[in-house]
Image (tube, rainbow, N blue to C red):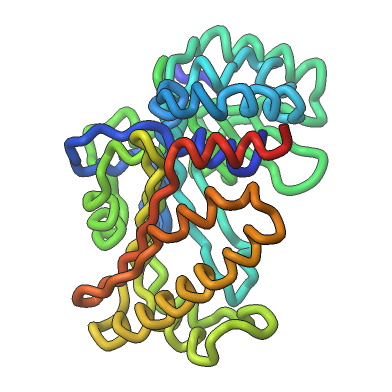
Length: 331
């Protein structure tokens, strides 16, 4: 049966989670739109179960959700993200900086443990109480709910089965995902995006893969001052971006920039390396002004950038004890 459906550093740590020592390639979710230009994956359950999150950030996340309007809507639907959600996967398309990203569309696939009948009945009751925000709609034989926020565009959602629900910016995205869920076909993402995802460790607590070829050259401006004069040209040669975040005893990150050729990678690496040098030079002044920022300055020492072939890799690490000190700065 198909049935509808402390922020800041603390939230970043929540999204990080814990990573296993043995790397295994991530897989593409077959429900994602075939025309996706970017994929974002958050291993939410893994994050919540990690020791570092329990120690430093879980309480702040609970406080954040308690004070957020979305929590009210989730409760009315009988959903508890801290108990029901295991993994969140997002596919985005329409990433056009020349149009200020106004045409971005996306599908969110939420994996976890759900009760389709219970969710459907709760959504039905919610729709009767508040039809201005939630309504039952159909697209052919598919039934879904339409959520209309007070501001912005509507979203559509449905429960696929006991382990999956989907939320999209268009009805067509929902019907396509439902069709993919009942078939045996593999994900139909662009082969280059599929390749990017397959290179990421599936135990990464959060990762992003995006195809950027011929897109970033359209950026109208890069801010006022400070940016290298040739940065726009360099971004025009950026074909892809992969970023991953994981936690063991520490939080570590890695960003890979896929450039058009080896020469472009060397040039971008120099720009990134110069930026890192500037950051490291400014941090002592920041610490002098606020000694509590010393853990951040110490962590910045791990920042490095390297170029190999057409790829620029930027990496760094934030020790667990430094996270605790930064989160408790206001105490």
